[in-house]
Image (cartoon, rainbow, N blue to C red; front, side):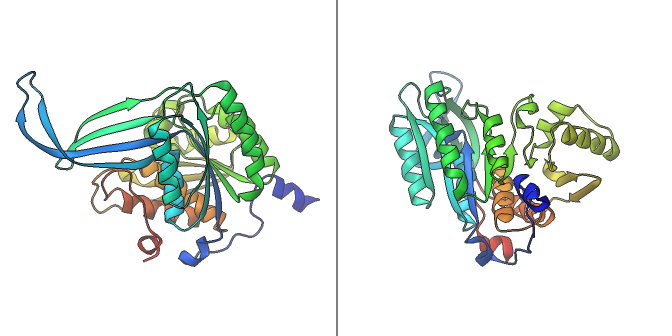
Length: 325
């Protein structure tokens, strides 16, 4: 009976050491959250507009990439895991493009079309590696579509080792409390990338991964490592989490567990672009834990992955040979 109770809490009974890419092929990760299409317009600025004092960008190249929870899934798939993605899209060209990109990446997409919304698009205009402008197109999904997504979530749970909930605050995780409860009742570990000021909706998850600014927004500022630890442990206990991971940019990341704190310094040699780094961190954590790694090894590899990805432009990914090389 004791072993059964442990499994129901979603705690791995016998962690293993993940030693290389081959260990990740059997890892099964279910990603749920707000997806978006990242569009990049690359070009060069050679003059100022005669209509207004703004630069004129001559477009030379256009790229489309998976964004939001789809980028989390993309990162997990790039590491070699078996990945499923559950989300909501609009019945439009951007939604069709997202579905096509998922298929290209080998991700099993369960995308619920909502005729009432447009697929979220983040459009970036870039000149010589410098972002000039970002334009967002977004709308929250309807209740009916979210209810059907919840039914699919319960159906997909048996096929996953770890569940990653990627909250971008776009409305796709309105039922996140139920999702956490269903997953933990099924013995699945649940990782959450949080958003906003109300963390009570994440109560009962295995771990949440706020960045430094997000954590400060919820817990308040701190003047010492001791004060940071006290605030983190207070929040972790109040949310009944197994662990809380605070990613701290150039300061690395710190893992808080019951009576234990583990810090990893940042590994980035040169920071080129931090966009999507949080997606890489939680995706790597999810894949490593699905492969059987304990929290400490998963954190160490996630920290290494973050150091690699910030040296690339845009929402990039990390390959197994980079991570274990």
